[in-house]
Amino acid sequence: MPESDLDLLNRFYQEGDADAIEEFISRNRKEAWRYAQVFTDSDLAEDIVQVALVRLMNANPTNDKVSNAKAWLRAIVHSVAVDQIRADSMRADRESGAVVDLNLMQRDMDLESDAMRTQLIGVLRDEIGQLAPQFREPLIQRYFTGLSYKEIAKTLNLKTSTVSTRLARGLHQLTLVLSQKGLIELSATTNSNPRQPQEGTNMTKLSAKTIEANRHLAERWNNLWAVSNQGLGRFTSIQNEDGTTSITWREDCPVGKSRGLLTEFPDHAEEKTWIESTIQFTDAATLDWSSLVSERGRIVDSSVTSCEKYEIVPAGETLSVSLNDHPNGTIHLNASGPIITNPLLPILVREHGQDSTAQWPARLIGLMPEESREAADSDWAMVAVFGRYAGQIGKPMSRGHLYEFGSESTVHMEITILINSGRELTGCFWEEEGFAVVGDEESARTAYLATQS
Image 1 (cartoon, rainbow, N blue to C red):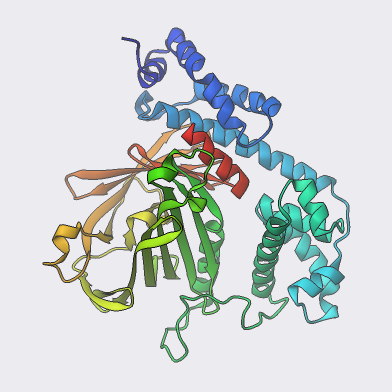
Image 2 (image 1 turned 45 degrees about the horizontal axis):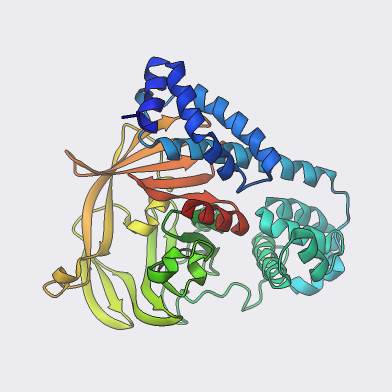
C-alpha cells in the first residue's frame, strides 16, 4: 500500500528523505497549480507554485511534523499568492499619477465644505490605498481616471450592479475613516446599525483609548471572505456611533439537491442552511460585549422552512436569551474569561496574546442538543475552559499558530490560526475542519468551486 501524503511529507521533514519529497511534489503539484490559479492566471500560477515548493522544502514545522499535508501545502501556496498580489498592487499604485476628481467624489460622499479639498486629497490617496482591492480598483477608476460605471464593469470584467455595490461600500468605508479623522461629520444614516442601542438605553461612555482599540478591531475583521469544503462565509464589521464594534460571521452551506451542483454558490443555492452571528464588542482589549445575535435556518426551493434567531444579552451574573423575540431562559455565568461562540472563536484566539507561558480562562457558549433543551433553563449552555497559546506550528512566514482549549489537565480542542507576514489572518482550522481566508469576493467564489472539484 503506497504511503500517504502526510507520511511522505513528515518523512522528509524528519529524515530529510529526498525521494519522499519528490513523490509528494509529484502527487500534489498539479493541485497546487490549480489552487494558485484562484489568485492569478495560469502563467503566474506556475511561478507561485515554484516559490511555494521552495518554501515547502525550507519549512521547519514544530517537532518536524505537520498534521494535515494538503492544508499545509495550500497554506504555503496561499501565502506566496497573497505576497505576489500585494506586490503587484503596490507597484500599480506607485505607477498611477492620475488626479482625484473631488467634485464627483464630494457629491457621492455628501461632503459639506469646499474648504476640505486640499486637506482631503492627501488623506484620500492614503486611505484608498488601504482598502481591499475589490473596493480600491473601482474607486480609482471612477474618481482618479473618470470612467463610467459601464466602463469600469468592462475593464474589471464585472457586472455594472457589482461595480455600483463596490463603489458604495468603498465610499462608505472612506466616509467612516474621514469622520474618525475629523474631516467630515457623519449624517444620521451613514453609520446605522440594527444592533445599536435604542434611544434611552443607558450605556457607559467609552474612553477615547477604548474607542480607538475598537476601531482597530473593526478594521482587522472587515470583509474577510472564508472558504471551506462545506460552504462560503464572510466576516464583516463596523464601528458604531457609540464607539462599539459589531462583527458579523455569515456562512451559507448547500444541502440536498443543491449540493450536487458544483457551479452553484452556497448563497445562491435553492436548498441551503445558513448561520449568521453578530456580536457587539464594547471593549476590544477584554472582548467584553453587549449583545450577541445568532441566526440559523434552512431554505428549500427559495422558501424558509426553519429559522431560529437567538439574541443573548449580558445581565449581571447571567446571560439573558430570547428565541425569535420571545424569552428563552438564562445562561448562568459561573466562571471567568471572555465569552464567545464557536463560529466567532477565531476572534478570541486571533486577538489574544501569543504567550506560551500563560493559561487564560474562556467561556464557550453554544446550542445544546435538542433532546437536552426541555430540561434546561435555555437552549444554550456554557462550558468553562482554559485556553493557551501552544506555539508556532511551522514556517514559512510564521504562519501556523496553535491554540489549545480544555480543562487544566485535558486538551479538548486544538485550533490553528494561519497568519501571513503582514500579521493578517489567512485561515483557521479546528482539527480537520476550518476555512481559508480569501481577500476578495471573486477569488473566494473561485476557491469555493475549486474545493468542490
